[in-house]
Length: 167
Image 1 (tube, one colour):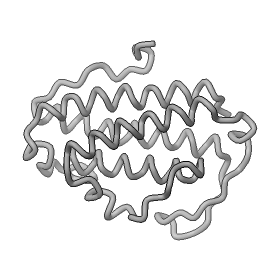
Image 2: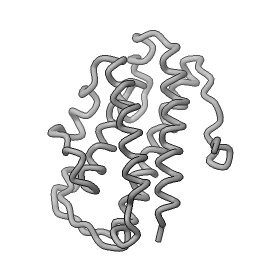
Image 3: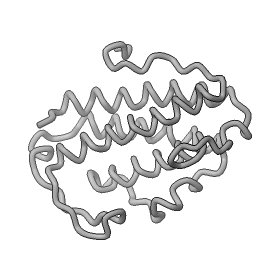
């Protein structure tokens, strides 16, 4: 099982890597960010939009302080059509995630969570610690796709290795 220190570390890693990738993406033209590149969600912009949507969905399951997005996976790529708005929303939500991580209760992590999965079309019950680990794993998965697309576009993201995250 994971603990609060893991959740705190990963929430900060999330912010560090989002700063990294958004910083590189910000140097590209809007057309380059929106160019279809063969990734699961197509473009840098769409993948980052989906990732923010997914973080909001998971966090809405973890805390009543985060409202659940009313869109599904297909709409997740178009929720933030304006780049500056997407960047701003991401930065604010990263702080929300860090604030939540700093107060997560170990007893809460140890309990199960039952939620309705739109992807599976059914109720799912799993240990909360597993679902929190999934949240961070999902982020890393899609950020890896964005990293690749940024590299294809000529961008040079910085280090992504967790041991080298600044304190």
